[in-house]
Length: 479
Image (cartoon, rainbow, N blue to C red; front, side, top):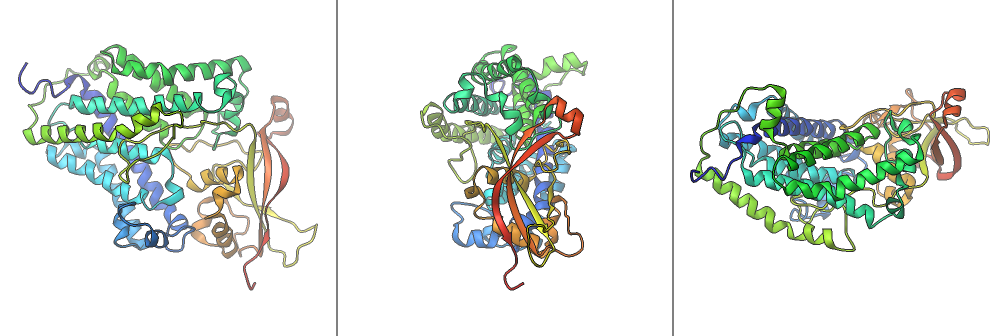
């Protein structure tokens, strides 16, 4: 063995290729989502404007280029620039340039998106934002075609995957009792934030199969991740199991890019050479020994991740485990987890408007339709992931408790009353295409999936029951 043979893992060349190209595509989705949604959410006239946020949150808590300057035009250029850069990397740009330039491209993607997340406020308060950033940071040090993948970074990827899966498993066992009695999936497919086109069918699987789903989830998240730290082929098999369970989640709901990032990280534990042989790909030629400066940077990054791992490791063993938390403003080495508790019932906030000047019991109201969240009971839920419909997701939280919507629901209603075009673009149906309504109200409904019989008789995927008023009829002041 030469002095540097310990540093690289040539068997993982295909694993790295799949991971890097896939991650670049997810960056593209993330930047494109930001470019197309930001004006209504965090723009200068958005519901929670960036200028107001950075006025009281210092740069040390939220490092971002937008701490120095913000305008909608500048943000748009930033997001579209990230989109173009991600598209270039997905097309192979990072493998067509020298190693140092490739690292710079990946570092630029990470820094560009970090600036967006750190001023995104509640709209970007999801665990998969931190997961994308942590994964993107590690991608900087994976190298390109000029060198074989560094073994240390591959191990850091496994450590990340372990925290994602094992943390999610622990938060479930420590949380809702239905995870322990294997009944959570009697409810989850119906009450999850944004059901997909197959969620109705998953919900109607037999009860015993739901219990099998939960038990299999516990195995996949609490047992299988331990095998990631074993030699091949066991580690590769463990990664394959995780990939399969993530694809099950992709099929059963819409969780933005959470599952897709997890799948890509899992590829870091797959023996690429064995996969290449299976696919009949040509044998990989060993790359030259990596330059010393690259080795030094990888060692420094490894030391940084090891040091920052203290807090998430402590969180894993804590009885008061927290989920989806970053311990530093750079979103490096975070803690993850989801659905520590599962809703037993699904509530939806339905927003309506009327152009009537005076309100009576007979006033006709028309509903605003969202792209992803349930509304029209006859509309089959759509598949959007890995796309992230940020407003739709927060509407789910609003239905759980008005407190989740305190900062943005009033501004949303105001923008509907003024017919704000950027806000209306986030919706599927605007029932007032000509002039905006005079009054807007919001009502709370209990939704449930219909039965097979109800579906056949009515054609409706949902049944809903009015619970009460979420927001009384509101009009613009002085109108």
